[in-house]
Amino acid sequence: MSSTILEELAATIRSRRDADPDVSYTRRLMDGAPHKPAKKLGEEAVETVIAAMSEDDKALTSEAADLVYHLLVVLECRNIDLADVLKELESRVGTSGIEEKQRRSAR
Ligand SMILES: N=c1c2ncn([C@@H]3O[C@H](COP(=O)(O)OP(=O)(O)OP(=O)(O)O)[C@@H](O)[C@H]3O)c2ncn1[C@@H]1O[C@H](COP(=O)(O)O)[C@@H](O)[C@H]1O
Image (cartoon, rainbow, N blue to C red; front, side):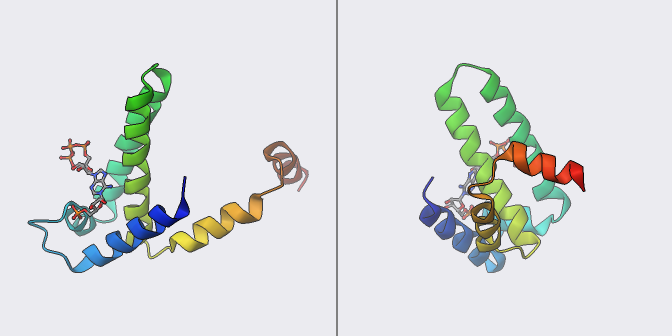
């Protein structure tokens, strides 16, 4: 996934803070923060899980896109920069999940 489109989408979502709720779905979600966007993120996660267990690649792709969009809205509502999430992912590059888990349980 290109981080450029993610960054563009995060910027669009930020700009919707001042949008008209009659025309912006993002603004409507934001107006119900923290519960509404968090609940919607949970629903999209469940829909993604269901699609993941089906054999419908198109449905999984579409649900995954919905999930990412709603995650970005939740992050924006909490003033968490996408850049910080990307940095966190970057810091994990090269460390196996198994190794990281072992280190955690040794603490
Ligand atoms: N990527 C998305 C995006 N993905 C999904 N959605 C919306 O998320 C909602 C998903 O809800 P469901 O599929 O569960 O459908 P629903 O049951 O009708 O939804 P609810 O009534 O339960 O909220 C739909 O309204 C989709 O249109 C999105 N809405 C907006 N974007 C992006 O955000 C930008 C700004 O959107 P606005 O804020 O609406 O201008 C858009 O240009 C897009 O780039």
